[in-house]
Amino acid sequence: MDKNEELMSWNEIVKTITKHNAPLYDLHTHSINKYTDKFLNGKVPPSRQVIEAAEKLGLAFVAISDHSYEIVNYPDLPEPTIINKTLNSFIPYIEYLENVKRSLKIPLLKGVEFYIDKPEHLSKLSKEAINGLDYIILETRTKLNFTEVRKALGNATLILAHPTIESFFNENTKTEEMAKWVDSLKENKIHFELNRSNLKEYLARPEFYKRFFDIAKAKDIKFTIGSDYHQIPGDYIKFYTNVCKVIKLYELNNFYKPNKV
Ligand SMILES: [Zn+2]
Image (cartoon, rainbow, N blue to C red; front, side, top):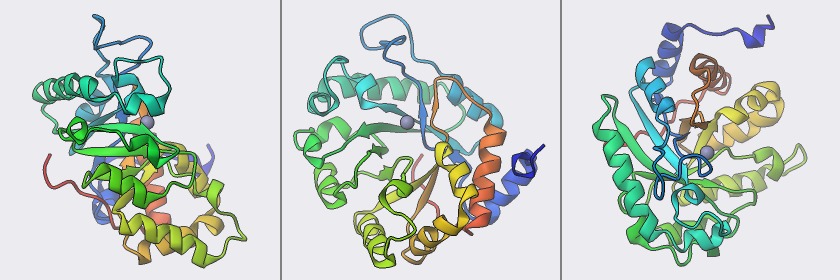
């Protein structure tokens, strides 16, 4: 087996996570699949397998952050329109999360994942629709204007999902440019997710990512941990092994901790 593929024991994982002052949590999981579940309209309940796997593993807490386009009652509309029609759909979604929460021993955070390319997409979002949530994950393929996003979402806890910094910056990017982007994250209190899909890349190219993580650390950016498992749990040991390798490699110690769970 390749040395990079070696798995850590769960004990080692817990030790490493604790040493780096990180919570043992998963802030990015999905329970709804609009093609199979249709929990608002049909009889098939969303899957709880990922949450139950996290509970069995003994995480301190876990979260559900389903996609807005899977929550809403208008699955055929394009996302920007959907975000504007969320109120009627968010109330049953939040009730569903409350029900799941009551049935678990592990504490559950209630989240949602918004796909946004332009902050205008959020302009008509009702604040009431997101009031009952603990946090919002932002998925984007563009260099979002974080100030505009923050304005639209009030004081919600915000996390940038699977940030693809390698698509915004390259080896020739000036450090000031990178620092400016990180400043904007910091000013708008947006946390940076260590997502399963990015970890291998972070481990493979430390010469590129070290500069970014050094800036983020110097500016006190908070990190979160998210598996992004969709309905079916994957290998949590493998995921956390890679999380530990990344936090050790870049010496990350500053993690977002929710005050209430
Ligand atoms: Zn996701």
